[in-house]
Image (cartoon, rainbow, N blue to C red):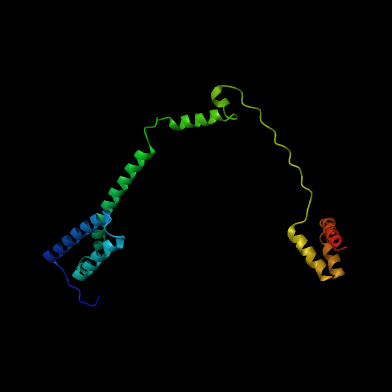
Length: 185
């Protein structure tokens, strides 16, 4: 703002603070009642008024923000309490104190692996897992791609040197090579 700031003191300062508190309370209530589209629409005019009246210069920006925020905090607390009360009545009907235990018991009784915990029967014998069959070795896709690239260069010496560095892959790569050449014949 370009206008000179008014310096408030004494009764004028008390009146300006009281006016800001009253306006903040009204705007907080209107915001609570959804009369503003955005929270900033409720707060920005209060800040502008405090600056124009010289209140910011007299008591400082932090104090002005405290005065503005106080009624908004009250209404936020009211909204939080309303939501909590609504949430608790919808979600938490009169449940017994041991509800969690009853729920776990119901689940375990319906599962044959856990039923013994509640019936007194012997636990079921542990099932042995099927041994995993070892998959035959195959070269990685990147190794096959590299082989096909070196093969495509047509350089026999380079191909021989490359295969010498990959002895475990050579038999598999030979089958791939023969499979490609069988398609061409």
